[in-house]
Length: 632
Image 1 (spheres, rainbow, N blue to C red):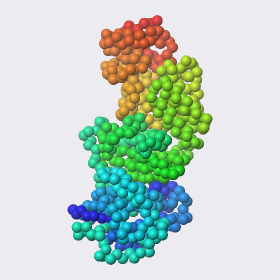
Image 2: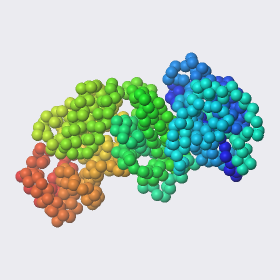
Image 3: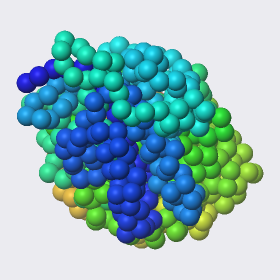
């Protein structure tokens, strides 16, 4: 094994997955032509020695950093002309990063921080541009006149100290001198370190398929520390996207993008996707990929960042394999804000292709994109994201704020389905928590919003889920309610919230499939390890109707301040488990909070009770009577 100082040149094709999806054959043919007619001749011209080739990536050794820059500029200056005939959104372009740093040589292979820094600098480069490190510039500036723009010190992944970075101004007159200069370098002017020859490593990659992907990028997660058993199928979490400090507007977009990507991925039945509510527990927290994987029991971690650049959004993406310690994929998207939904599709499709998923409601990606409904104005998207955040605080004030934001969104774009999903849930919360003075009106509004959501986008799983909730537990209509839930799960079989409601209440109480109900809600908990307490509320109910009263009580005791309905299930479970004293105590506390409650009135007026199976209804009411609650 040998360590030496080397100049490292890393490059990748921008948007490879998008180009391949649009025209796989054409993209491969053009890329081959660029290799044969431009890239390979340039490597030969500047005395490059091919070290190895991996798929679409190559590793080349050069005798000097000057020749590295000469080669890079020649490639970048010639690429635009070669792509003149291609549509703007189909042009092939490269980004290049160059670093001078330590590398480790073993069996003719080269790796180490020097390579890693070059890779990170490549991600900072503009499309069709070159980004070099400070160490590279310090050596280069005395040898070749190059115009540059300092980018300051940047913090790059897995490198402890910030790296000085510079943008090479390819179109400047000074940069042209690199191409015009003599490529033959006087050996006396070559840099030497401890007698080792200076080498240049060149990586030209397609699709972000890093040549060093077989090398560990970070320490692998310890599977002995996993909170859950690692599933056989690919498992992934999508973390909230980071934004620059103080960028409140971008923060909303970052949250929305991450949630939508996770939702898209969860529609594939052969993936295990952690719910966004659990993934967002890591928002603004310093947690390593290993820690996240261990706590969630998953293999892959997708994370990203959003930045504003003039009028464009810059989105950086990284997909890491925590089990092997390898960064599987990285890419950068520079687009107008209106293209945000196209970016989400590209990211989702790329991840699915990398993880090998193919089953589920989204197997036909082209058809999905054709019917996906997006808002006409991005301010609507922002309002929907903010309204969800407010609603999930579960207070009357925040629920009202959520409704107001959604009402405002309808004024801007009355045809965006997700607005009405949110409105339906605000009305359901009003009814569930008794925040409404007109229950009949709230029920009518909830149903109207749910129907409108489905009418505008029948492919939206969450629209069918909220419709099922309205029919079953607001209107007491079991047949359309069950059908709506089934359609929601057909469209998105791994939506944790829908599974929790389906397993905890519908499968168990309405359909009498108690074992399946318990399994469904436990799977929901696996998909959302940091779920809200209402998951436990569903589990209490599922265990109780199954006659597993001890398990129901155990789950009940984990809930702080359980809601009215769950308290009644808990009291009945205690009574049936012959824990009469505690049942009576809980019943007395309940009557203090609801002095007008009676078993008879509850039996005849509760819409929720009207849809559950008679034997489960009788079991619940008998338990309340055993606990001493009044009949009338």
